[in-house]
Amino acid sequence: MDLSGRVALVTGSSRGIGRAVALELAAHGALVAVNYAGNDAAAEETAAAVRAAGSQALLVKADVANQEQVDNMVKSVLSAYGRLDILVNNAGVTRDNLLPRIREEDWDTVLNVNLKGAYNCTKASVRPMLKARWGRIISISSVVGLAGNPGQANYAASKAGLLGFTKSVAREVGSRGITVNAVAPGYIETEMTALLPEDNKNALLGQVALGRLGKPEEVAAAVAFLAGGAAGYITGQVIVVDGGMIS
Ligand code: NAP
Image 1 (tube, protein in one colour):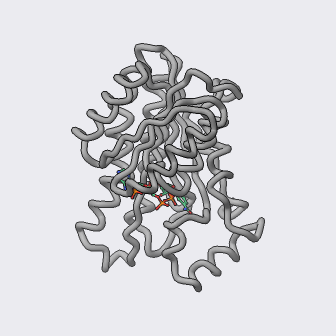
Image 2 (cartoon, protein in one colour):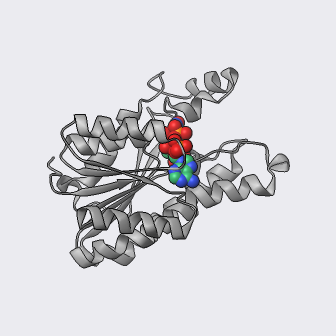
Image 3 (cartoon, helix red, strand yellow):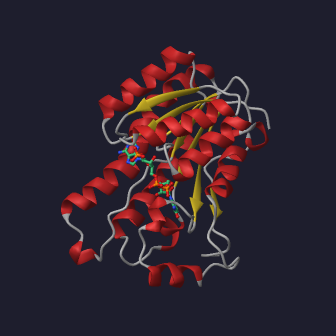
């Protein structure tokens, strides 16, 4: 797969799955804009690793839930590199609780970052892709958006929403050479899942056919496939990367 000359914006790539995606795309030659919310040190580490892989990195700090910040972020990518070919909507948060205990602000935060963030970033990024008549938009959903999970009604709603968003936008922009897909990871080893209580982790692991947690790099491989030329006739789809958890 050759992504040389392509410019990718990966939201939430200071850590976890986003960082692995940034490194995988860079390994295939893409220049990478590393978006993050507040963790400057972690974002610098991702950028340094992208450069060490022989590519270029641009740090773009912005809250994806804020449309003005997202518009400015995309402008700065375009002014640095002159193009934007690949958008990976990866930034995400959890505020887990059983429904009666989900506070309105926790509902809003999760929906605003995970779903409105993808709307903000896709709306801003699709314009240069439409002009170029080429683009790849890949959103990181979750198996929780397909199967549900107690304690995650807000998160599941945001991740299921991303699937409808993906399928609709795919139909809008397909005639302009832009593909729009989602990747739905299962239980992946990152700081997000490190927060889970031990008995929850063991219960989840018991559902995984492969009997182990996934690695961020294993999600990144699916994203890179969708970003590359070999996936040019795949759009509106969801690739589940869950070690056989919900299938
Ligand atoms: P993580 O380790 O917690 O990293 C989250 C990333 O998102 C960080 O880079 C963080 O930036 C960024 N971020 C958070 N809020 C943001 C905002 N408002 N604007 C911009 N960036 C923001 O998470 P992860 O486990 O890698 O998850 C990445 C994605 O995969 C998420 O969408 C998650 O829902 C999804 N996912 C994860 C799993 C899993 O098992 N881990 C499973 C299914 C789906 P800072 O470093 O600056 O805070």
